[in-house]
Length: 625
Image (cartoon, rainbow, N blue to C red; front, side, top):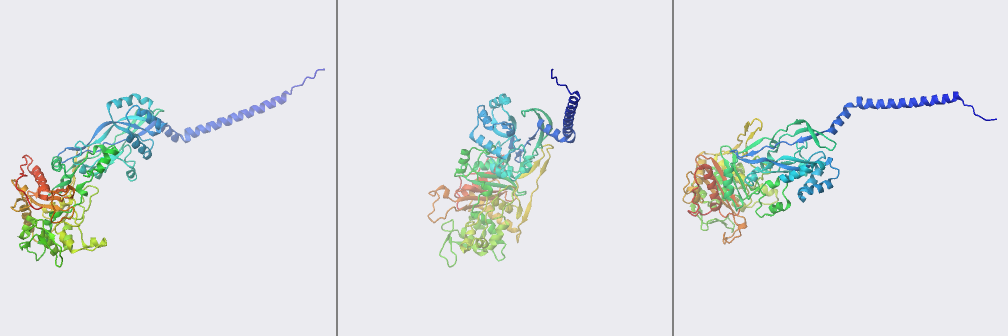
């Protein structure tokens, strides 16, 4: 008999039904989960994920502003912006940076400094910013990059505006330059303000007025593909251009001063007495600022650093020199304020001076002396013995206070950064150093030697105060600010910072008469430059020792670097001052022969611009300072 199993259809039906139910429930649960997730993504967090999607598609890029230009007082361009091709890389779009750099090196020339600077930027800047690898690509290099660009992820070819100084080194210590932002600057600047900008003012006007010149960064929203390539611009907010600056400098006059100092080391400062405006701000030697814009190469920079003439030093505000006999007019004025002082009283000058009870002799520049001289003749002939005795009579405390009122030992407050203050010594100053003030130091202070130090700018500001008969004005570089959109000029105004009072207004006349005779008198130490002048010059020569000298000192046999510094101060025309000048020539020898002729050339260029300079530099040898 066959054993045939019977099917339990009811049981199978129940099993099938239960399995189907479970399957349906699972499907429903999965569907509900999917729907819930979709609701979460599309409804609850719609804005968040929509924003992320847009950010993947749209890149926001900074647009660097156009830096403001710098002009001289006559509108001559001192600093401008020129278009250049730059090779840039966006790091976050690069998978293998080393491979990319190697690939680019086969297309354009990449120097070691370019790579080093780029690597520094990689460490300092966020990955989404465009970083400069090369600047100043020529047309052929730019074309090669453009052709290969589809195969270079993260690489961009940009036409940028770059800082350029068309006059090269002319006025570089005044104008300064811009350079790449370094690590120390990154720590103090607002990075949002400098987005898209890799340069900042380093020295001079470029540094002092960085906030005006920089401008405001713009924004560009660009639609990009999966490779980061820009497809189209969605939105653009234009940057705000920096303000244009007009300086008080006269470029032609500046060129005259620098030309006169070629082959020498020194400084020339010229001010406008009525305003304090800086007409000339020369420090020699100079250097070309253009290589500094994108980073000067190490070898060239080393040459500048090791140059014995130190062209990088701004002698106008950081050079500190003994003023020598240029201090004598100020001490003469100080003496006139003493009640029992008689300017007509004569003093015998035998060629030396000795303090009571001392064997040391303080020499006069004129070996056998000047004979009997009063205050007027002492200034005209620059008699050291007279001022030795005057210094002892006045005392160091009175001299310190009076000379400080003219700004000696005090920063002028010029609108530049890093000005030195010089030194107006006093017993208190020495005590603070744990030292004792000696009477001999009072003696040598009377002729501007010893510890007293001034900068050329301080000297110019002081003689400017003499020209103004006591009115002190702050020296000023900035003349006006121009809005690049409206072209409206905002003029700066002179800043009066003090007034020097004298007991008798005629004291100014007496001092001016003495300074006029320095240049135009028969015995004046600067009479050489006064010959055939069409206007009266009030001046004073000065010579400051670099090393101690004995009676056997011979300038011709002394090494050039050990010779005396030559100085000269002046204002002209003497009866209506239009310009005040201070000249310092390092190791120039005598103020009369080295510094004064430079001042005459500058005065002629300013007061007689339409005429040739007819100074007879070879006529009449001058003596003394």
